[in-house]
Length: 81
Image 1 (cartoon, rainbow, N blue to C red):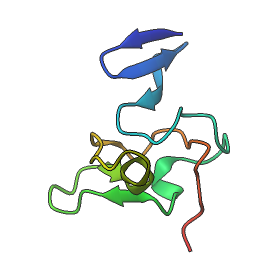
Image 2 (image 1 turned 45 degrees about the vertical axis):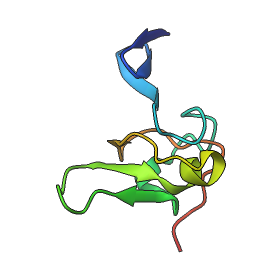
Image 3 (image 1 turned 30 degrees about the vertical axis):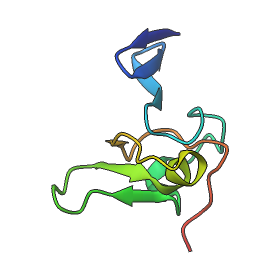
Image 4 (image 1 turned 45 degrees about the horizontal axis):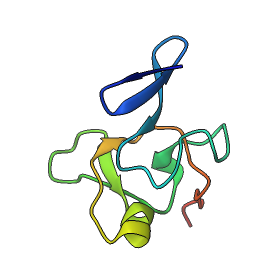
C-alpha cells in the first residue's frame, strides 16, 4: 500500500480510503461502495459521481471532503432503505 494525495492506494492504484470518509475504506462489506450507503450524500448540483458522508459529519461536526461514490464502504456502512 502507498499513499498518494488524500487517498491510500493498494496494488493497482485502487483508492482504499479518501479524506471525508467516516472510517477506513474496506473496513465494511467488501462488496459494497459508498454509493450503496444511506449516509452517502451525492453532489446533485454538479452531477459528478462524488459526494459527502453524513456519518463523517455526525462524528466530527465538520463537513468532510467530497470523494467518489465508488469508494469502498467503511465500518459504518448502512444499506439504503
